[in-house]
Image (cartoon, rainbow, N blue to C red; front, side, top):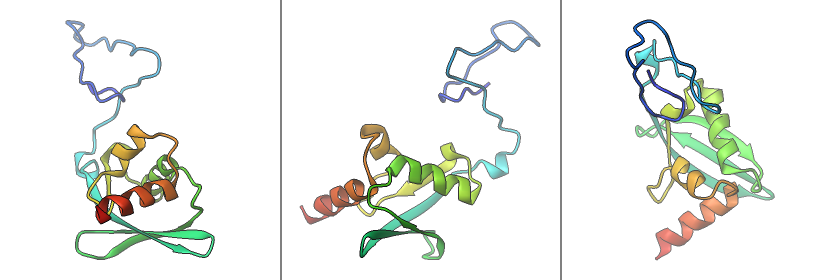
Length: 128
């Protein structure tokens, strides 16, 4: 079985007894493998006045979703919003930043990073 923390576990000899997971974790359903494939999108962000326009595109260049956001919005909340709006499981959504990093990796390293922080860091990396 797959837990929400990404760890696969066995039922440890209890043929039909499903053990209760530790607090803070749950089992993740994987009954629709065709819907659980990774969805990979390229991110681009442009400042417009006091807002930021975030565009998510497929690797074919087709725009999938475009959001008007505040520079102070938390990157992790944006990641979750995109997954929700596209009805993609969060763990299957791969959002690639302009510098090639995954947004989820940046969010894990800096959970309180804003959208502006993430894209400013990308910009600096690309210039060096």
